[in-house]
Length: 111
Image (cartoon, rainbow, N blue to C red):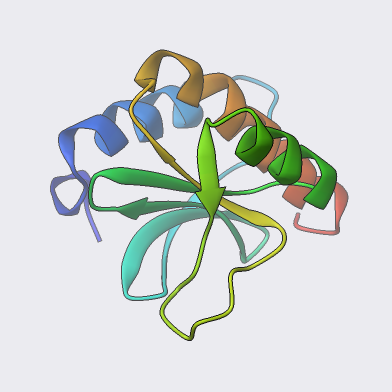
């Protein structure tokens, strides 16, 4: 899977994440029918069309949803996932949140 498989916005985030020195290494992976990045085999970021989907602690996801920054991610089975948030717009804030997601997954045993 190459960078050309990503939407332009997601490709910019991937490039920035991959350039982070000293951070847990990220690798391309597919889940929920979408391309994403993983740490130690655990996905933390998904390119989901117009949305960026991130795995974050449940309290952080709830806070982002309450602030109107995103919605709980539902991969299509009718049950929104508690630790996944789908963000739309606000691309300027996405890199910081993507870094949070990578650190969260790494702390859970990814890499």
